[in-house]
Length: 336
Image (cartoon, rainbow, N blue to C red):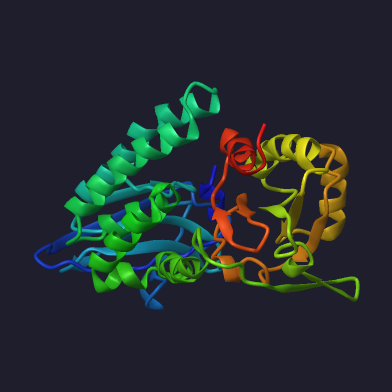
């Protein structure tokens, strides 16, 4: 799932809210392998407290007049849990990232539990990705909207951001608190959407250059040369990417002699791993190897796969193609 992509932003930060005051108690169990942990606001760089770990257990106690998005970090720097600091009792166990026992933390856990059965239906092939995304988006947007005044808005939006349509995300982010806007992952995604706005459907392509084995590879080696070009940002380690490869191979085999070319862009991948995956998956169409961000940035690619269809003159015809939409988009322009 796209959440991989997610896959990329591991830090969380505080979100403040007024009128939420009182004592808090945070208890962690099964935290072995360290002697001290820190309660930390990552985005603002502030450590709120530290606690000794004895027999895998620690406790934080204090007063708060606002809710915060916080995390537990061991003295060795390992991330051990993320939750909302709020009045009440919060308990964590080992690598439990949710926290439970206080209202906002329980509300987030309840949302995760509500969504879990639908994710299982998706993985079992009984629910399409579009159906899953729509269902999750509706639930998350409702929760974020209802909690704009506290830290739950940032926690939910960050955790499920890959399911939120970009214009909805931009609206939620822009209406969010100062703390929500400081969450590194959300802040970066908002900036990437600004980049994407320059490469929307109907816009002209933006070129890039990627070096591999002393040679420069450019998008303009393929795009803008009179052919329809299907670009696939992918990686050998990306499960959803591999799922789309048969769809790309199908249109490649059907249209490669009809003014069409498919090009893979190996993203954040070791070239040797890319080559092994190409052989395993039967990929014969051209590849731009060793993209470490040079190709991704101009197109605001924050998760993969990202599949884009370009027209003969370099105009972006479609973005975000997946599944049967790949074949349908190519057929629209090249016929059956």
